[in-house]
Image (cartoon, rainbow, N blue to C red):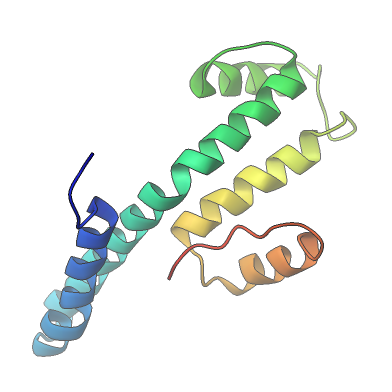
Length: 135
């Protein structure tokens, strides 16, 4: 067991420091780069927070879609091969939902404030639990 603070908390603290203390004290390119660095740290914190549950859900969906066991890399490779070969398409039960789920999971890490992401969450998940990152 790790003592606190957890890695995602450290990343968020450093990102906040960069945004609130460092970036305002800088100008031009350095100010921009410090904001980019802060955003990258926040993205990594979200990845640490969200990845375990999202990876498990993705793995379960892939196993159901493909009817076999394997790890994420193996099963994603198989899914891609089957789509490329025309064995699976959007009429395949569960495929469209799986593709939307992984897209939303990636946006939850990369761009959680993106308007279209938020609108899609609201539309898709009005009756289901939402993928909600801490921002």
